[in-house]
Image (cartoon, rainbow, N blue to C red; front, side, top):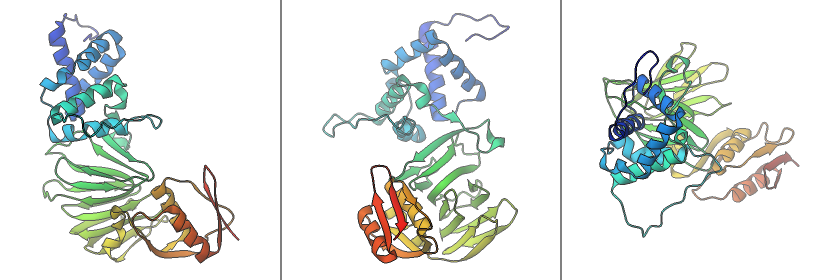
Length: 348
């Protein structure tokens, strides 16, 4: 590497490749220092040296390396897939193909990712929050119509609902705080660790736990709601107000900043993980937004269609969108039409 003001030495190719692979390994494993991240950026800017690294990866020398850490090996392929452009596709291997060892699969995934464009796979800088802008994050983006289960290195599990974005630090160290940033809805099953509290950041709120399971609903344009299934959490608003919640309690911060809490059946608020849609006295416009996320469609209302109407209903897993809309048509007297781009709802 060239450093201004210093005389660079010529590094033998074998040593150079080893150094470059170690750099890639550290970045993907989340253990790279700030200086090493800068080295990677300098490398990608210099085509000749970058080509050498690509040649190394084409030969999959990685299979001889130790890349079997749980966080790296289990998430390598998923990280690649989630960073592909929306227009890209990833072919699934036929099930009758030979099964390769996990370390080789992770190595091939890393090679494919970088050969397809290193920026698609490597961890990127995020600006959330501003005082953490030097940190790097792994971002899970779940599109409409899908859900995702993520297992953290400490064993904590997160179910991410459709239309949600979850960010976790790339460097998940034993001595670092456990912090998560959420836009959307997720259910958390947190492993206890008194020395490392688990914190979930949403827009204008913070949820702190030691070991518990709870649901967070923090979609845009809706109140932030937390429901506790087990254990205890502390729900804090940006204005300084806070409330401690235990099992089967719910707290909600309204758009005006008001913090309200009370009893609730926690199982109702997390049943979405089972594919069930359940609404209890839910404003119909909010129901439409839920349908948008669940079925990955665009719902457009005309006039005041749905305003002042509320929904209490349960739709089983696998219930089609057409059947749900048909029930709304009869119950609420709505006119519902659908074209190739959107669903249009209006009053009759």
